[in-house]
Length: 468
Image 1: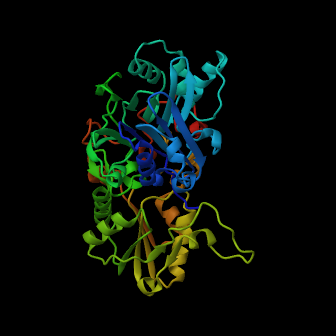
Image 2: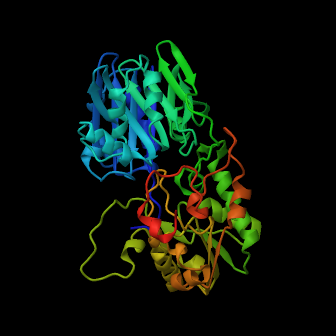
Image 3: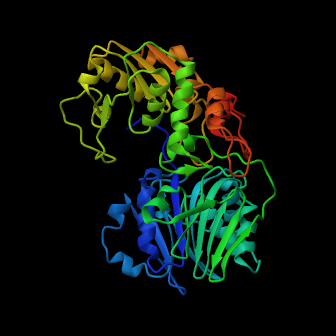
C-alpha cells in the first residue's frame, strides 16, 4: 500500500436534465480519484427517489446499463467514497437515502463532522436508531426532528448543530440543495448544462460532461434549486474561510480549478519555490508519479536541471493483489512503480514527491532507484513536514504514526536512505499558494502548523502528545 494520505470523497448533483443519472455517472467517473471504496447514485422522477449503491469503482458498480432506466428522472446526486468516518462497509455507502414525515431525502457528504459522535450520542439517548457508522447519518436524523416549513430552513437549522467540514448535496422529490461549511474546507463548484444546474466537488467533472463552469459555491453558502430556479442563502454566522491547502498539494486533479486557482499551476509553483529553497547539483529531476509530476516540472524549470520520467507507474493495479510465495523485495511498491535505468544509471537524481507520511514507501522507492544505478539521490518534498493529523475529512494516521512529528529532517533523511532531504517550508508553501480568491481568508494548514481553525468538543486520541 502506498504511504499516502487517502482521498476523502467526491460529490456530484444535477437538477433539470433528462439524462440526470447518466451525467451523474460520468461526473463520478471524473471524481474517482477522490474515493475508490464505494459509490452510489440517487435520482428523482418528481414523485419518488430511486437509488443504486455498491462497493467498488464507478465503472464496476454501474456496469449494467439497465440500471439507468431504473434511475429515472431529471435530477440526481452521486457520491464516491473513501471512508474517513465509519467503516468500509456497504451500509455506509452514500448517498444515504431515508423516508420521513415530509417525504424522502438523500444526502451525499464530502468532509468530516468533528462533533458527530457527541451529536449521535444525544440522538441515541433520545431514541434514534442508526443504521450506519457514518457521521453523515446524524444529518438525516436531525433533519427529521426540525419543524421549520421550508427545506432551506430545515437544512440550515440542522447544520447549525454540527461543526466541521462539509460540502453537501441533498436531493428530495422536487429540490436539490448544495451547501458548503462556513470555513469552506472542502471544494464545491456550480455549473450549468443545457439549462440544468450542476454541482461537483471539482471542475474536472464539468469538463467531461461539457458543462459551463459558473463559480464556486461560497463558504457558508446554501443553494436551493427547484422548478422556480436558483435561490442562494447565507444562513450561518460569518467566519474567516480556511479551505484545505492539501487539496492543492495532493487531492484535487491537476486539471481542476480549486479555490480560484488551477491546481496544476499551483503545484508547479510549489516546485519552483522548493528549488529556490533546496538547490542541489544534480543531473536529472524525476517525479514520483502521478502526484509529484507538476512540482517536479516546476523544480526542473527553476533549477535548470533536466526533467525526465525516471519512474513509470502501472495504472492498472487494483486495491489488492496476490504476492508470489517466493518473496520479492519491495513487492508492494514495485508492482506500482518501476525505474527507467537509462534515465537513472550513473546520475545524480533529484526525486520529487508531494509528501511523506510514515516514510516507509519513500524508503523503498529510494532503495529501488539506487538499485537502478543512481549515483546520488536527493529527495525533495513539495509540502512542509506533516506533523499533525487532519480531522476535516482526510484519512490521516495518528500523530505518533506521522514520521515528522517525532523525527528531525536529518533523522528522516537517514531513515529513507537519501543523500539529502528538503521539504518546502511553511512560508514557501504560503507564498506559492497565496490566499484563496473566493471568500477571502487563508488556507487551513493544520497538518503542518498544528493550528486547527475549528476546535473539537472532546479530546482526541492524540491529546497525550500535547496536540491540544
